[in-house]
Length: 566
Image (cartoon, rainbow, N blue to C red; front, side):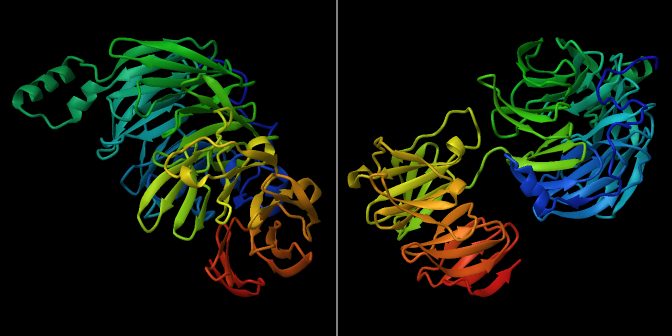
């Protein structure tokens, strides 16, 4: 082509000798690897494999497709952490992959210039679409029509009818590699990004009319005319100029007239459009290398970007500020995917991919008699099971948007003192103690909280609570004035504590749980388990369920094993 690619991992017809690849390695991370990494993000699932170049979430099932630089396409169940299937008919890297919204199909595009449509129920490629003359960067199904849009290094975007298996339109105008192209979620538009430093928005309304069933002979005649005399199916509506280097990604907002783009100038740009024009709104700076991919979150008012600087960054769309940064030690990021329905994302990097959330969705709660106390939207709320009514109890402190994932994590309630302990990850782990006045139910009056640092805090008696000091592997027993009345060392390295009856703690370590009597400083029970996330006691406190990611272990109050559910 006579065009020299920008620096970084353009991978244009070159061997990547400086990053050794692990061929044939398809596995989940071991427990040891997870502990070493000390991940900050809410990781739901992680794989180790060849470099991941394409990702796509299934709309209904907990599945994700990962297309690899080795040419393999993996189908994972990210909830169970299992590899369901693998597809390896492409010759060379597969950069684009996408699930169909309703059919058991997915599409892939690779460096072999081929677009393949697969049926995952039949476990095979159904057909191959040929026409591109260079690497295929991205592929995507249309949300309604039987169309696929593809972007290629041959400087074109093609739209295909996968039912008739033909190319129905070629969009020309870019004068460098087209790095991505995607349909608008509702309108007859396509957005594309290119190394020619532009983002283009294309109007494909004529193509939609042409492929729709003609309502009458006049429309049919006009279509015949346009075909005979060179009618245009897709026209450039806007050319967005503002990036100083090649643009690697551009994406539409799911509901608003916004576009986001990321480029080799290390910038993320936000654009707005109306019927007649499109313009740059703002620039987000912070990445230290080429921005590989950038997307709007499907539910939250945020932008997520990743880069060859080995980081994922989260940006607030309204405040135009950075919210969070997640870094990897050795791996450059290449691709992002946002689930269309759920609060879950995925990112592909040099040695695998990660499925993660930005914010916990399960509220902190505690049940006492007929009342369910829980934290939501800056309030402590109470739901009465008998009357089926909900009331705001008191406002609670909520950190600003400086960090997404600092909402209350656990909640402990003392019914006799009408007091609540709320724990969060603020300041590396902290608690707030509220004593609720009897007449405040439903009024929502502000109460002053007593605060302190600690990774866990729970009530262990009527007017006593335990705070975990993880650094010294001890608990501090405090009164309702927030004063330390006792300190006690713990029998095992403990990263969380749970209620286990008056005066007792259930201490969690990585591979076991222990019931510890605080008064006598005795171990009452000890059991090896997978990492326990939640603890649920029976009403009579005789039995306990220990909930892990994939198992439920049921024991008696001395941690004598009764059964395990997988």
